[in-house]
Image (cartoon, rainbow, N blue to C red; front, top):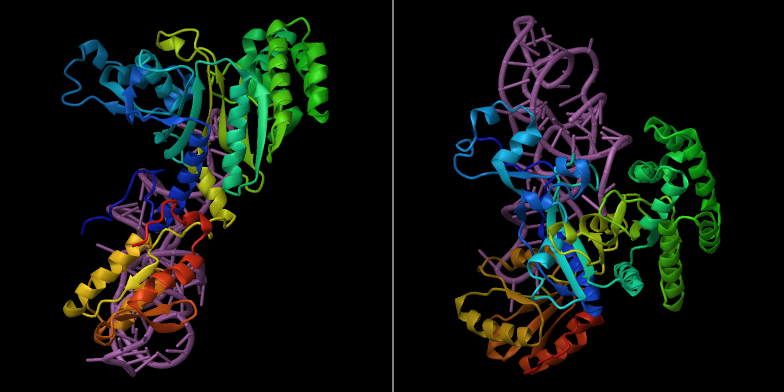
Length: 473
RNA sequence: GUGGAUGUAGUUCAGUCGGUUAGAACGUCGGAUUGUGGUUCCGAAAGUCGUGGGUUCGAGCCCCAUCUUCCACCCCA
């Protein structure tokens, strides 16, 4: 007896219903990306490990899936190498490749590699799976899809504005309530300088990031535990107290506090400009300037953005920021980029829990033609062609079995209409139609079929699904 | 990576103190109805109790290991 087949921890199969819902999400996101002039690219699932290592911090390096070299991966090892018991060192000897951890770093690599073909500013979107060797939890998978949208080769804050508009429009089109949090790494750097410990910015931001969750006292403990002195902690506290103020007041306050710290001031300037621009456009989502927003990825240098669902607590559903020197690591300095990444799997979970999918699963068959046997099939195929030419999703039941079973197939697939063409109908050049939700059925002539489609089937479809270039025979 | 919970028909769950043949609902399949689904009625199939060891006369239940899922850290979409 063989054991049941299974898939690796943290990975999932997607059923047909799930895929329809997932595609709905991807389609909506893509539509918005294109609307703002972004174009798609794809990169390989695996990258050279040298491309990936060191880009996500120590923690990130641990979470990289490494791919064992093909063939006899031990043959190139010396006896000294064999004695290495530290996994990091050994794995770098026997693994040259790894699965990508996100889409931003491969994108930076892509930009550097194809710099001569690219027109800057380069606006690209990319929707592909990424892998992390994390311990799975709810809303946390080892394989999941990111939908990245980035613009590289432009310093303008207009790009930040555009990304926020995109975020807003994506979540509006999906009917997901979203709160957009904004901060700026330069402001955080300014705060670290103000506290007299500029080199501790990472520790400070990581601790501050937990402020909302664990409160100031615990954050203080963590800072203290990291070896940050009391005076610095006091300084940080004096700034963090501004969270009670409005966004505008926060900026005024910080501008005064950070007066002697050029980096911080620059961050304030960028935020002011962004908020000024945001006033000129219409945004549905709530936007907050959140001083405690840090984001772990250490390549961010300017704006940082994170989006949370206002209804379901599942961590961030979208996040990103500006990175000034990501391509520099690959040999192309001085190119700034900014982008965000939508977490399709978490957005799915949110929408699923809120039952936001009902309206969207209209992608399955709309008309089932019942199978009456070989003699009737020829007639049936003609009917199908007419329907499909009218852009109606139609199928013929492939086997000649009892009508009862064919209809219950339609029922379980939620097919709204059934057509029957048996001997009687064929002899009179007509067809019987049945509405599966009302149970109502009638015989119509073939000529009336077109009208039936227009009047009844179309009505059950949303306006959106009407094809732009409807071709009617 | 650290700590904790969980696993019983396809699904959601019962299963007493360790004691004979592990149950229910829903779903699935067949029939009532050979040109009519969704409702109704009748019937059936379905499980190596996650997996592998151990304790015991006897294990779904106790012990160990392992895997899965979930939760809290860490970190993150």
